[in-house]
Each structure stands twice: as structure tokens, then as C-alpha cells.
Image 1 (cartoon, helix red, strand yellow):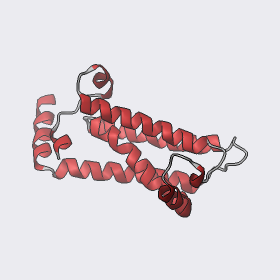
Image 2 (image 1 turned 180 degrees about the vertical axis):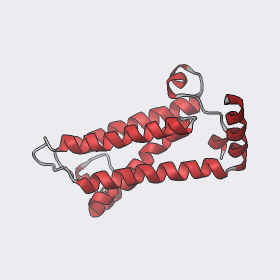
Image 3 (image 1 turned 135 degrees about the vertical axis):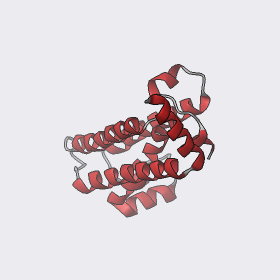
Length: 157
């Protein structure tokens, strides 16, 4: 895993850096947040009505209803986790994305054709936590990154 071997930079530093991979991951995350907002504040919750979404994806999303938040928010977290170098920073990213899940459901209270659902929040949080847990396990159990993390922790102290 090439991305696991890279030394990750804090998010604010990468915007001005010349590293294309980190910038691409940051852009993917921002686009993902934008899509999450767009799809959550639409007047219709039916995904089959989204013209640019492949029909098979829209059908699956409509068929599985609330559970669709699990893979959606898990995928949304991945780019941000990749570019965030430290455990506590990744925890903050997950907390911010969890607040996004909550906020999107609160906004739906004010849209007459939508309704807020606690199960949507649950599955969104579950997706975020699953992505974070898998990501941390990959970092911990990848021999190269385990050695880099141990060396980095020794250098920081």
C-alpha cells in the first residue's frame, strides 16, 4: 500500500504544498462532502430521480434506504483519513464528519418533503467508525507504517 508508506502532512499544510496525491485526496473529500449535502437537502429522498447517478446505484440506494448511509459515509471518510497524519487528528476528522451527519439530518426537519431519522444518523456514524477502525488497523498492522509510527513517536517525545 503505497499511501500507507507516505509521510502524511497536516491538512492545512497540504493546500499550499506541491504534493498532488494529498491535494487529490483533499479534493475528493471536499467533493464528497458537497455531494452529501446536495443529496441530503434535495426535496426528494428518491435516488432514482438523480439524473447523473447510474440507475443501478440509484436502485440499490432506494432499495436499502437507511443502510445506504453506512457505505456512503465510510467512503466519505477515506480521503480525509488518508491525508491526516496523526491519530488525534483523524479522531477530530471523524468527529467533524459525525457532526455533518447530524447536521444533515437536522436540516431535513425544515424540508417539508423530507424527514429526519435517527437510524440515518446511526448508520452514518457506523460507517464513519467502521472506516476509521479499518484504517487504524491497516496502519497498525502494516509493518512499514508500524516502524515509521514507532520512530515518529520516539522522535516527538
